[in-house]
Image 1 (cartoon, rainbow, N blue to C red):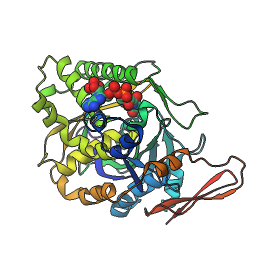
Image 2 (image 1 turned 90 degrees about the vertical axis):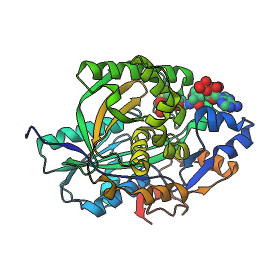
Image 3 (image 1 turned 180 degrees about the vertical axis):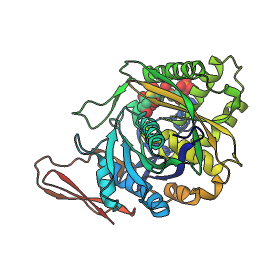
Image 4 (image 1 turned 45 degrees about the vertical axis):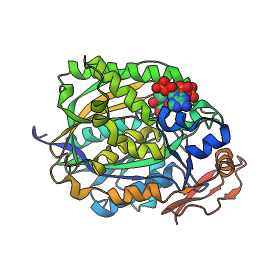
Length: 391
Ligand code: CAA
């Protein structure tokens, strides 16, 4: 292993769903003051999957442009992070591997630790590349965030997938050592195997997240990480965008800084723009923040970016990365903006119908109506098997 080997994110691509429920529509239904959604939690819309979309179709849509640009020749591993898994045994990434026609000489695995899973996947990928720098790893984080109807969490739903190609000598972002780590056994948000929707102690979860920010930063500092002032921007896990503001203020205070709102907005404002329209994408959300930042910021070449990944239950990690010269030529800004703007707004009745949809569990043949205009779809559940197809 070469001492000057740099490893990080070589390409990043995101996809979301066919439909969007705006918070204005939700507020008109439930009588909530729209200020609570737009200002209080900082959300404008939530992506809603069509009946024939799920974590696999979003993941394949996010990963396809990466495989198309770089080919699959050097990708020997796919790590798929999710907390809205479609099967208890088979890795969702195998469906993606098949849809994208990737070589059989690939290892595919699924990872789970709530919203932290995407960062675990990234760090494991970096380890694999240190072992053999000629290989690349496809990391995919894909999730559908779903709470009960009329639950306080309902306004923080969403869905998206982010695919990242991790490699030596990356074109976008070098990921740095060290990482700051934090784990605490807490039931702030969880989903038992028998439930389709998550359970959450909302206010407890915010406190748990903030404690994890302080804990991960403390370890990062003890491991010899950068000083806070060295970072130009920070990407936080964003269950709702105002949470990133709460987290960043907490970090600044923790490091002895006065709260200057202009400084807070400068540090994280751009990272929140995609999440505000997409909603919580769990494992993908911190990297959706990165895509939004890279796509919109003035030249960040050579700048350090801080990452805070939080997964309820809970595990958190703080780490840094440096933006690589020439990165702007590799971005997918137009495609990313289109992924958000192409979604069709739906009314509350349609949203409710999709929210309540579930397959019969009789093992019969259940074709799924054609709804998505995305590149991949769930065609049927047949004999308890999910059947995917290119559209
Ligand atoms: N105008 C402007 N602001 C308003 C307002 C109005 N009319 N009405 C209320 N607000 C503000 C409130 O003051 C509050 O802001 P602050 O937190 O800054 O005080 C904000 O809007 C939300 O109001 P409430 O706290 O009263 O809202 P709530 O009781 O409905 O709960 C929530 C909010 C806890 C986030 C809830 O939506 C929830 O449980 N969400 C799911 C859990 C979650 O996202 N937790 C985050 C940390 S855990 C994590 O990060 C993992 C994960 O992905 C789930």
